[in-house]
Length: 501
Ligand code: GLU
Image (cartoon, rainbow, N blue to C red; front, side):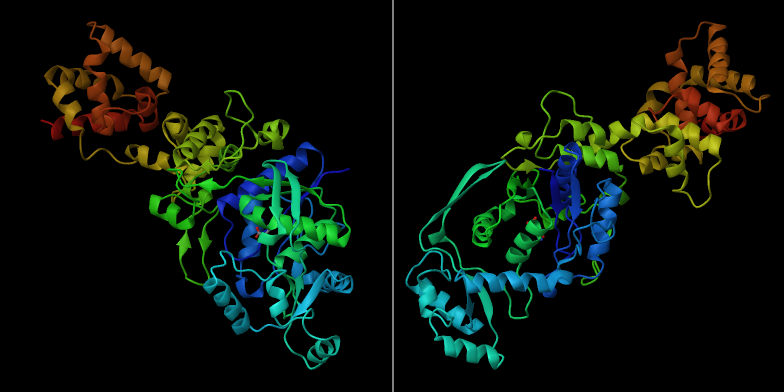
């Protein structure tokens, strides 16, 4: 059997990072088994539709490098890939279930439903349901005569179609992550399959589509686990073979206490969406991982390890390596704590391995005026080992563009003295006639100068760094001097001598 998996988001807002992880695991599994990764848009709930969300989902997946093989834009033989365009299909299966007595019409108004729940609550029923017991007191095709049902439908009364669950039966299935799941139908609800607007509910549409699209494995978030027994029953009722199920562990807040929500992420000051999201309803702008400076391959590596690990010590995995290593068996049952520090760590590792050319381009684009290529290349090479994000290079390297106004107090106190100043003056004199120097050349000049009277490096270097950058530490000083150029170095030494006199 060929592997066909789907990511099936509802376009109700921005894609949460948990959704991206679900998409990623589906993608890895599909690629590993040379199968297909499908993007299906589940937009049957018209009330929750949010403009721009579908487009956002497509763009986020593309940025993350998990583009679908089949979908609204990708095309494919199993379309349409948007549920609102498949509306007619679902009704036919709801009708089939009705005809076979596995579903029924229900005409209850929302007041009647509320009343029923109230009644059950008063009778201390823990979990008020529309089920085998209560359904016989409600207004539906099981309690009304055939004529009355017909009449109500003909005169246009609102109705829904509900699944008719067995009264007391264990539904069992084996989840690939959670192992055996057993739920008794006495605890379940006769869920609505088709709504009064003729649209299917998530449950019906999801099962029909997974079947018609020949989905082999349903890999989705744990929040859907409670729906899975109903889905299993629906497959049985429709006489279809069910797919394999794998329910992924929740993403938890950093302290492990509860689900990682947007609110929690906002409070802790890190993004929850892959890309910037401009909420069309509230007007609120939420920053994305991309815009915060995360590299997509670092983001993916980080995400892959939230709830899965390949075993062993190695943590840096390219997409191809992830595909190779990925197995459902190694997905954890326990919730995955979200750790933004780990995300930063991954970004640092990836940033360091990026070619200078690529980083220089990204770095240069942060300025209104483009920076000379050789300069931006030298700056990123000097700083990439020391930062988390490309934009940090701009901050950490601001001294490349303006001479220091302030000088680190501790370094000044400990390392700035008459002897150092004399040496800096002497070194300035060596540099003054030069127009440019490589870091190797300037190193040679500096070392040769100190060697004339065997001055130890530590007596001058910190003062020189202080004069050039105002700081006590930083990137390779020779690289700094080469980037600034001899004239600027001399100028800054003079300015520092004046400022610190
Ligand atoms: N439309 C559901 C969602 O928004 C899909 C759940 C599933 O994968 O079955 O996540």
